[in-house]
Length: 219
Image 1 (cartoon, helix red, strand yellow):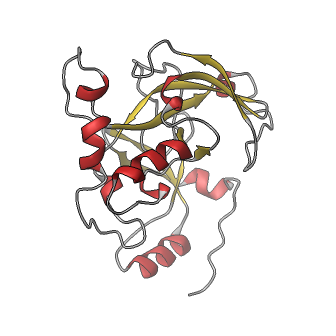
Image 2 (cartoon, one colour):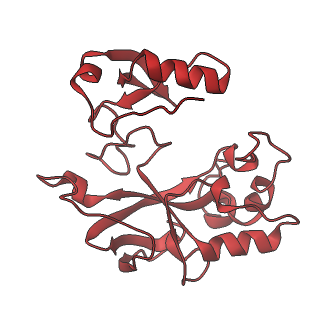
């Protein structure tokens, strides 16, 4: 296939092509269409009609009950998902067949801490960026799907997680909602500044410093 080139910075032409009817879970809104060439490339590659759209900033909010004022783009629920290698190792130790970390799609993976210690991290600093731990990530069926083939081979690792990472296991005194949790949803507090980000970066090998820990890891 021919190489498709898409500019990182939104062009004026894409700004004129706003399309509605874009959805992620319960959210519906608008986005910028990247044009016919991109649509044709992805349609050919995927074997079905498709279009490439660019996020329209400021139109999708995260859950107001947990992080009011913060936005998310096309990510699942929150802009950042933190998971520790220790938690992955603890899960795989319980499984008959280990699963890779991409089953859970975190964009920040940390090492050097105890399994599930990230559950209680409420404020962290990576490089010069400050993050807020919002809530444990409730998992859907995606972790059961092989990210290479797009097919679900079994109901694992969800079945195993349910035994020790369900709301019933973590919060036995609360109502049981039938959810399982793995990883910590986060927001970057710098995104609310006058100049969001301000050139701050996070890269492989950066140290993570925990600034605040909640009293209950299962909170």
